[in-house]
Length: 203
Image (cartoon, rainbow, N blue to C red):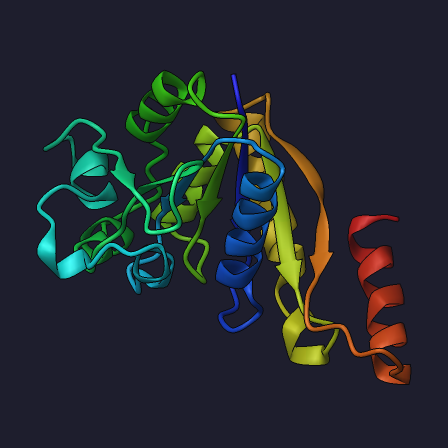
């Protein structure tokens, strides 16, 4: 079964989608099969992979709400990269009352993972129900940050949520690491922020 990885951060603009797509492209180039799961209502990953969210009836929104079984779309990237696309309807799941770890996403992904070498979940820039569902389904969490003060804000909350999910609904989840995106070649501030990050989540 392919490894299931959730890429997370509660801050937008740090490059989660770019990193997700980069990992998918690298896996494809290595001859691996990848399933990309888009859980961001903005649907940027779905657009880049060639699926127009406004033209489909079955998205990850319908999967989470129990209205549809998982429908896998072939991406525009060709063989090796498939997609469970997002839609703006995901906002309904994100705005639901309370914190609701669900088994639907995990069951759906586990039923598909045997056909892939990796499953990459692109989470929204929040720590709400959608990210909670992603972490409940994942084996590994990867936090994507940029080495700036604003980019590191809230990283403790992300790590705390990962711990919470590990304690309550997914004991197989681990924090696989932190990807530092948009790293300048030389920057004293970036060096300071990397040290701060190491103190926060460990080296």
